[in-house]
Length: 292
View (spheres, rainbow, N blue to C red):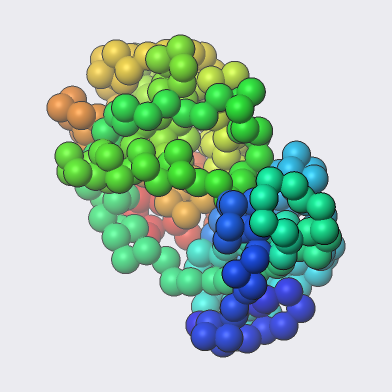
């Protein structure tokens, strides 16, 4: 694998950073995970807008312009001979002194990598995934900037590790009010009597790029949509559940704890097809349940 480290394209073995890099020491950085279809990143502009928002929230300077990042992505995909891929862009605050102070950390570290799609992607779309409710709570917005996609990822890591021991694929995180917030790595939706429900930003979620596309497409298709707070009991009473992120797109859920669902249900199937059509229109690539 070839990786862009700052302004150089290097083999993975040479893509090394300082042990004093604050991204390594403290998770002091921001990132975006994107998906390329035919070497075109779906909703690249939205991803880079969110990267800029995240960097601003953490007072990290982005070392490359939007245009340069787009060129970098093409360079990395081409060098790795990847057409359909997961693209990960990480920017840390860079090398600095030990301790909480960011004084002296003036040169960000920029890492861009691309990898093959997950091997289990087709299975997730055809048979669905299993979710478990983590005992950990989603970090509150007055503790960390929830709207920033930062590299301090322990909340999600520990949640997934907990539920995986019970056989789940992904974790549901509740907020301090015991309302459903989101999954560890995805936004969550449920369908009740034909209405699509999802937690609002006030629940403490990271508003995903794919989430925004799904909401737009569902409304245009005439589906009733509600962004509203709800508890875990609403998921247990739901007819369908699905999750979204940039890598998996729209993935049906076959179970939340002991509650099982038809996966994919009819509304989930429709949303996945609408999403697939939008991907094809924008990139020429394919996604969704039947296409992966």
